[in-house]
Length: 248
Ligand code: SAM
Image (cartoon, rainbow, N blue to C red):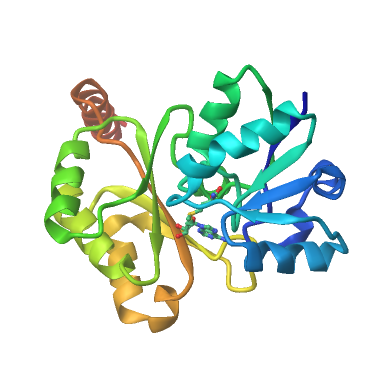
């Protein structure tokens, strides 16, 4: 039987496509893509011509069984999304589940992912983190989600588009406080790549005052809520430092 290859594609810079991804895309019988027009452009840039099948949230469940039949018949298929790693705030998990349920092989071909790229340059604790993806579009639901996350101690990673970046940052400030440490990563790997920090209040202010900072694609990395023990320890260290200054 064939295998389904889940292939990461660049999040902006074409150079980030791996050699293995290129070889797999060139070698499969067909490529399932979120947006076939978008993927055709990528393949053209790579000089690859392969049949494309549209797979998006609305038809995924319906066509999964057909793809399983093709895999059973021995075909090799690839799954890509518009950018980055499929299934990460992108379609694909239903297909992967069906393929695995049929006892067929699913092969990861890893590469770019905006969340991981942002974490890797944020300088915010990254040993434990929660990927939250996109916040709800409606203000009420967004506030509610943020309230539920306000005491989370792990680092939080959010995705956002230019349409809602200002509202989203305003709500983050309202629910987590302006002093919470955060980094905004914009247009990673692209021409206008910007990584700015250091607190939610500071980021919100800079995005509001500069129209250019509202353009493009964003990852927001927010430090988790410091648990009480950690906060007490820091306070202790602060007092100790003050005291030792006086005792000099
Ligand atoms: N599957 C993708 C991945 O692996 O990162 C994510 C797809 S999701 C539909 C698109 C969102 O990812 C954007 O709205 C943005 O939040 C984030 N994103 C994608 N490319 C980015 C980039 N170059 N810089 C910053 N954020 C990016």
